[in-house]
Picture 1 (tube, rainbow, N blue to C red):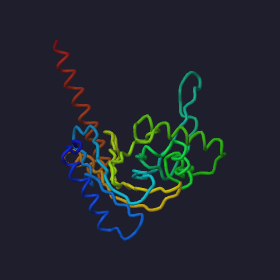
Picture 2 (picture 1 turned 45 degrees about the vertical axis):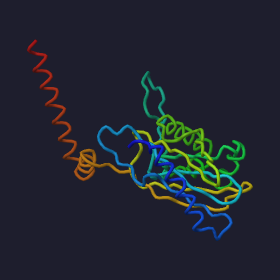
Picture 3 (picture 1 turned 180 degrees about the vertical axis):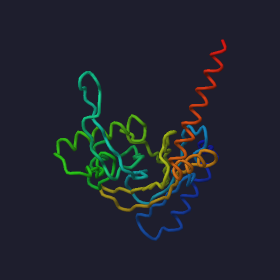
Amino acid sequence: MPRPAPFAEILLLPLAFLLVLGGAARANTLVADLSEHEIKITTGFAGTELLLFGANQGAGNVIVIVSGPDSEVTVRKKSRVSGLWINTDSVRFDTVPGFYHVAATESLSASDLNEVLRENGVGFRYLNLNPADEIAPVQAATFREALLRRKEVLRLYAAKPGLIEVVGGGLFRTRVRFPANVPTGQYHVDVYHVVDGWVASTTSIPLTVHKVGMEASIFRFAHDYPALYGAVAILIAALAGYGAGMVFGRR
């Protein structure tokens, strides 16, 4: 999905300003929206970028949190045993966001941003990622850090917050990059208006990521008929191997 064209931004930002004017009865009105409310994953999908835009009245900063969908994740530890690397320990986490992105206005310093995230329990460093089973706190912290590092390597979590650009007159915008391996499901896009370190108002925007076309058909087939899908995959692999053997065997 291509990024929104410049002329689209020219139209979207004034629209956000008009929305604020329409609801200006309160001092800290906050409105925001996305350039698209769904991401369609097709064959050859290489990631995409969405524009989040909005406006708020009054002084303060803006923080954007994009997260979802939650799933169960098992983190495994490998150790060398008799010269072989094998899984020797594992910890299961029940509710782990598949994707997590934070963006903030430039005027909010790194220390102030961390304080706001910590106080309000947002930001992936402050997620409530507790093991499903009771284990020692030190062990839980070690596996939790390993989980976060893995998400960063996969570009599903970003250690450095993105930048929210303040255009003027209360208007703001930021771009959210979704990698090719972004999980499918329902996402939460939460926008916070922060004043003096505290959240003054919030708004949420729905977002759906789903597969379409041949990619979706294969996914549904594998999910609904896993045994048959496995058998077909093995058959295709066997036929491919046999065909390759016939071709190269004749040379």
